[in-house]
Length: 513
Image (cartoon, rainbow, N blue to C red; front, side, top):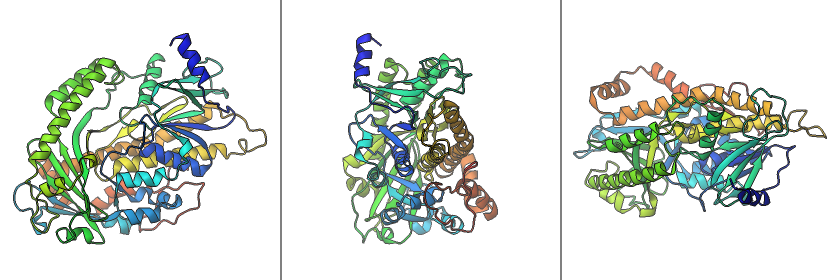
């Protein structure tokens, strides 16, 4: 960086009190905004840096499961969440896109009411935008800065003045981390939480630092796009045609696709609306091109300007294919309609601004933290969007970190009259605990979402056998044992009043909390 550019950053540096915990959060998506809500309630100083110029929440609907419901209650969100969401009682599966697709002629039904009886709360479906706005309203406006695209991060410690410091030093207590934005501003904090999504700039910077230290495993490939999908939310529909949307409990309806379409999902929303998702296979030439970009970069397929340009060109091609596939399903029967309606009716009732085309990644990064930087949500683990795993896992990440950070600032040494600086060794210890607690669970969530995807969209004899076992052969005891792996963990924020655990399966909190 040129001397003139350095002086420009120096003159635009936001003041930072090095003897207090101040958290920088990169990204104001669901994970970042939830982290802000929890830190606000914990009384911990923070600042959210968002690259977009305004609030954006793409996607159609998300599922909120029992794992995070007690924390929703602690944060005062339960009443609004129940008002704006639909509890799910079952998944109705159709094995074909042709024919009448009558409700009583489906090919399988998966009961979901066990969530309410075993874990105290049903899985609830809510518009992603509605849920995001619930969280956004609970963060003071001055704590979210828009138009802050991070282009570089740097860690400063007294022994080195650079990123990471001396690997053997655990006594340093005067360091901080800087985020440099493309508008010439610099922001400083005790730690940096990367909540900036699948193509995380914070992760890219962290991995570059690890590579400089010789700690980056070049055999660990970047996360690959798995599928692409088109999502949308209709405007309010005719209650007479869609009587099923007026029931107290809703249901998912899934149609297995054919050719380039993997599956179609229909999800009920309040006000007689339907959230729909079309999952599609990635074109072979896109996968090959992406593999070629991976081979040219050990850190990220988007690590160079030329790769950025290639990525955008490929994305346009994939989105064009997705739009064509969307047109192909217009005459497919809509099983939620009791008037033998087709998807044309749903698509025509969906405004263009309510339709998004997104890549779907799947994988778990092998490094989640380094020194003063840590990743949460899609920045470090991605699941296919089945069963609400993506949103729930990001919220669980935030719960664990917020709990540990509150414990750090609430310790006897931190509350004395002359507050000591937060030691880097304490920060690293928290991040290590976070990684140990969360990585296996996130990995299992990734595997579970892939299993779900194979059941409802997989092709071939293997997928048929899995479906048959799931719907007809799996003993209830085995099903519940597997479900407990997902839903038994229902933690609480220790700094807020407790919420009673309901359901017949006792709640597990995080290890070490």
